[in-house]
Image (cartoon, rainbow, N blue to C red; front, side, top):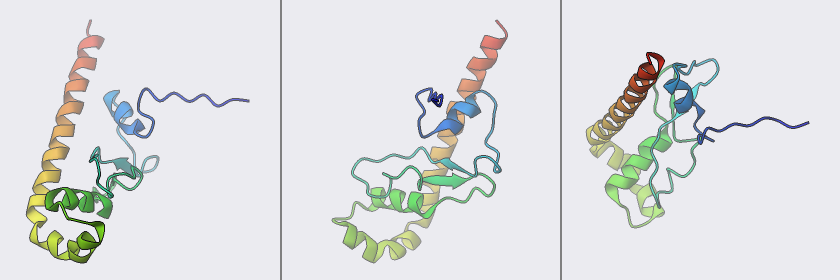
Length: 124
């Protein structure tokens, strides 16, 4: 017995594929979606399972906020970051929110462009 596994080049990110074809994530079946944030040499963005946003509430995981802050602050070490991260989150809160909002809006534009292409194909 074999399981059929199709990734459509989206092995850890099926919601993007599903959204493109009009199937929005439902909290019942997909309570969290990947944030689409990836940074090299960032200890917080490596685990895709933790870099998520909750579908039902829109709550952003702490891992996402820490990854953004890591990129913004460019700390000399993980230890130095851990010692100051609470202080830095407070200090840069609005900037972090603006960065994440810009990212989310960019993702929505990508989805919108894909949707328009799909609709155009349907009308041919």
